[in-house]
Amino acid sequence: MSVPPRKRVGKHRPRMRTSPRPSARPPRPSVAQPAPEGSDARSVAFETLVAIEERPVFVRVVLDDLCQALGVSPRDRALALEIAAGVTRRRATLDAVLAPHIRTPEGRIEPRLRTVLRMGAYQLLFLAVPPHAAVFEMVELARRRQPRWTRFVNGVLRSVQRDLTETSAPVPGAHGVPVCDLSNRAGEVHLAYRQFRSPLFPAPESDFRGYVAAAFSLPTWLVDRWSTRYSPEQLLQLAAWFATPGRMSLRINSLRTSTAEVLQRLNEHGVAALAGAHEGAIQLLESARVESLPGFTDGQFSVQDESAIAATALLDPQPGQRVLDLCAAPGGKSAALAERMQNRGQIIAADSDAARVALIAPGAARLGLTIIEPVVVRLDGSDIPAGPFDRILLDAPCSNTGVLGKRPEARWRISESGIAELASIQASLLRSAMDRLAPGGRLVYSTCSVEPTENEDVVRRILAEWPEIQLLSERTHHPGQPGDGGYQALMAQGR
Image (tube, rainbow, N blue to C red; front, side, top):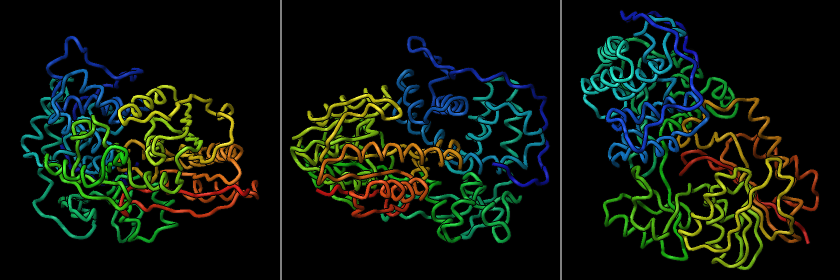
């Protein structure tokens, strides 16, 4: 995202070299001989961010691989995840904060040096780390990675630190960086604005959309797109929600336990949690590594957002039915369907990603589910197993615009043309699903997008081709009310 030109007030102009061409894969530590400098939280965050910049991978996947290879402690993993996901999520904001303190032309700053600077700025703004410690740690990281970066990193971050005041404001402005807190039990985003002496963003009074894009770190085109559907107040609420990681939700396995039992066990182990808005849902009030939670290895619950829980409830599969879960990997919704069916019947869990399909069976085994049959299909869906199916769930590939907080890298990988391409894929998959629906059967079309192009428009276009199929209901889940955003449409085949 570009930020309007502004006066450069910093004094730091190091000698820069052109960065080498990125390698296909980021440097990976050796499992047998881990480098000591690569096993601390900030080094793991740095390697994760390098991978995100250079390859179309996901923050959590890369970070978990690194932590496992290096034997990183749970405490360091939590800090590494906070930094890596936070820097990815607030990248444009951090660049706006850094810009007044860098005199070097944008194109001459090496990408990995830019990553170090973003990490330092993130810690100064958003983490409860003493400023001197934040600067020191990033200078040390720079020294280990590229010694010639150290003076530059130290100078820029100390300049940012001096520009940051001790005050906060309750309203948006060009000088204030929004800090979005989701720690209250009500699940509402609390906004405060950390103040800088220098202006950072477009003035919200004269360029509100430009301000939202820069201050909340969203692509300008996406803010422009949303501004045609949302009021300024709604747009600000949406941007604030996506500036947080959201909340982790659990879906209890009703075949093995109850919501009350899981809540009691979590609370006994000091994990703050409460019942969610949907039946069988639990919200965690703080981030946690799910594998370490009591009851996980026993198959008492799975991670699933409440909008996804709502999709399986809307389909309402019955014991003994034949069900197709299309775009099923890694299997969370298939498991939810099997639990609702009391593990009786048949679920074909189909997806084109073979690596992710391989995750379905182990997940089902942990939960004690035996009716799920993973199947790898072609990307165009031409070899989807034949019907008829009593129930079909199509959780279509989408832009992820309803989950940009949880999937921080998604906001930088989507485009308007990409949304149009996805809508074409979604329509093709929905046709394939409708062609396999049994008389009297029910079908749910679901996305984690908030774009009508991917949701209502797709459903109405395809329904016009299938007059015998009726739209029974549709729901749009608005981000933050109470979980992430998404859409579901329930359709039925006449007998």
